[in-house]
Image 1 (cartoon, rainbow, N blue to C red):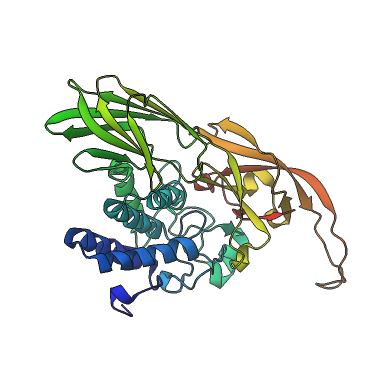
Image 2 (tube, one colour):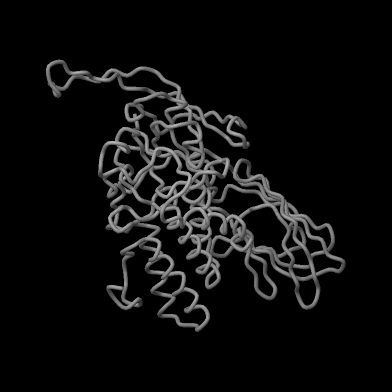
Length: 397
């Protein structure tokens, strides 16, 4: 409330309230055709997603006021990144998509849902995170007053219990985020399996979507319609795969790319199939050099999923490990946590700890490294194996 909304250039204040406000602004801009309000939304969106958003889609850097701080300030261990804030970012993205179908909004929506949102709930659905850290030392969480807002394990409930029911309503309404439509076009923003009903000029059709995401990149869209229907299906090409994808079944259809969506237009009849295959490569990410907290560190992603190291798999001392940016990762499909997911293994190095006798410091000595195999798990699944250290950003070798 520091400035009239059309004059605001930087996301400020309570992160949840901020993105709720921006979502409302976007609704009003769309319903009234107010371009100046839309431009204000675009300015604030760009500030959040290019200068104040964590790699997990989390927002809100400090527990003081549960708020944004300033551009490129991204602490990982004192982070707030409230689950509701990522949910609010999804709300904002959905409304921006309604005004302007651009994949940059859906890319962030997908990132936040798979990481910053889903991490807020345990795999059994019975405990929750209010705060979603990217670096955890349990001792600090218990004994450092500045980090006691960060919990090393999910909680059964909260005095202010906004996050659990907010998670429930988002998960139960995921279809409204996966797809939008107008008179003759169906946009597929998220590749979630399901059935979408579409009516064009009185002709009804169903589009049945089968998806292997986020673990494999195979997606099939099948049309079911008693009579041929002329329409456009707009398929988001995720930013994480770039141009590395394949499309089958579009023979006889007009195809064009626009703002990150592949528009497939033409007549559709019963049984028509589109098959997509997105490349699912492991990517080693680095932050903008202005993010001081992540300098010399890397984060691991595969498709839309961010990965992390956990003490349960890798032992204590996670800040001592080093990963080469060009390391080769081995994929491991497992259901050991109760759900199918892909873990990643990589050969790395761990720095031999330095213990100083009769003091805390000594003259620098060349570090000694030992070989170590690391196991990365999806970030959203951390803390389902007990209390322990966790790191998303890992030192590079």
